[in-house]
Length: 66
Image 1: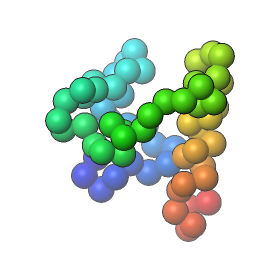
Image 2: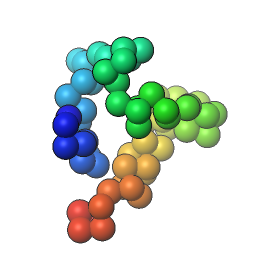
Image 3: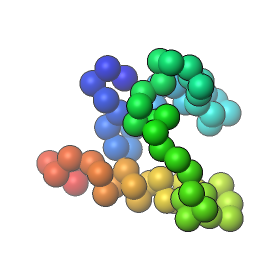
Image 4: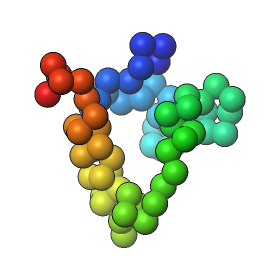
């Protein structure tokens, strides 16, 4: 996504299985490869992890988009 991925928009590199299709490749953006999962991010289930990421997206979207 050359212009960046807006908050709330599905990444074009996210496959049907919800996995990154460019994971580990040099073309993967630094913002993705630099994200280091921590226990608080992952929670105890996929649902908790998605909720954490959803909050992160909401908190980091540009002011005009809130």
